[in-house]
Length: 244
Picture 1: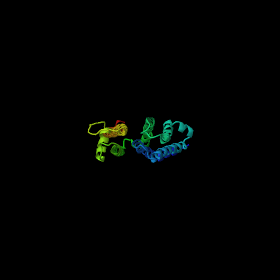
Picture 2 (picture 1 turned 180 degrees about the horizontal axis):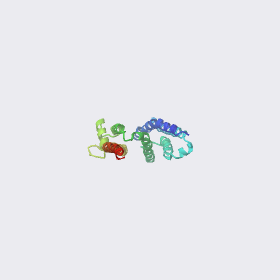
Picture 3 (picture 1 turned 30 degrees about the horizontal axis):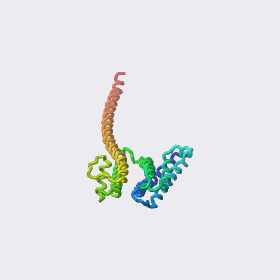
Picture 4 (picture 1 turned 90 degrees about the horizontal axis):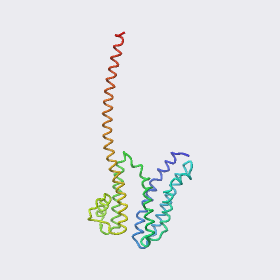
C-alpha cells in the first residue's frame, strides 16, 4: 500500500534482526562445546526465529499483496523454520545429524545479516566498513580465544583470527578442535567478504578521486572555450552594424 512505509519498516528491523542472528553464533558453540547444552541456547534460537518472523510480517503488512511478499522470501521462511528446528534438536556433540542441520542454519543466517548491513556498503561508507571489519575480526579473535585451546590469551586469538581471515596461514597457530575448525570456515568466509569490501571501497575512493580531477579539468576547459565563444560572438555583433 505504501512503499515508503515498507522501507521504513525494513530499516526499523535491520538491527534487531542482525543482533538476534548474531546471538545464535555463541549459542551454536556453547551447545557444541558442552556435553549438556545450557538451556539459554534454545531460547536464543527461538528468539531469533521470532524476531525474523516479526520483521517479515511487519514489512509484508505494508505491501499491496502481503501473502505474495512472504512467498517471495523463501529463504526467510526456511530460516525461521530452521531456527525453530535447531532449538529442538539434540546436542550436536551427541548427534552428527543435528550438527549438520545446525551448520546449515548457521550458513542461512549469513543472508539476512548481509541484508541488515547492506546500507553501509556504499562508495561513501568506507568508515563504516572499516569499523565493521575491525569489529568482525575482534569478535572472531574472541571466538578463537574461547574455543581454541592453543590460544591462551586474547592476543593469540586475534592473531589466529587475522591470519585465518586473510587466508595467510603462517602455521604458528592453527585450529586443532572440531569446533575451532568449523569456526575457522566461517572466519574465512567473513574474511573474504569483509576484506574484499574494504579493498573495493578504497579502490573506488581512488577511482572517484581521479574521476573528480578529470571532471574538474574538463569543466575548466569547457568554461575557457565558452568564454572564447562569447568573445567571438560579441566581436561578430559589433562587426554587423559596420557591415550594414
